View 1: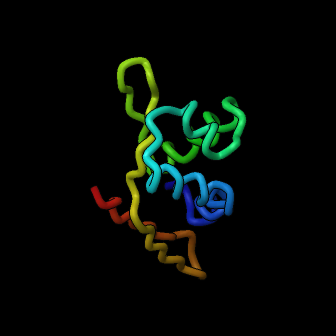
View 2: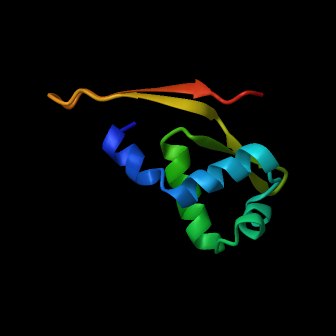
Amino acid sequence: VESAEALLRLLTPDNRNLLRTIRDVKPQSVAELARLTNRAGPNLLRTLGKLEAFGLLEMQTVGRRRVPRATVGVLHIEIDPYAMQDRIEAVPAPA
């Protein structure tokens, strides 16, 4: 993870709802996730790419479908207010 600041910018209320939907509903495709969240496909794919880059989810290929899977259950962030030495620990999502 680049920094706690970048991570916090990514974790908007909309993106947290998106992650919750992925974790709880377990959509079987990006198209299904788009329908569930009422998000446009290209914007959704861009957001999923950012969330995947931060390790918050992974995109699996199942047949011809791309399936998002939650990988993180909880994040622990330690911020040093005197130096840029933030520490972020990801606790895996329950199976």
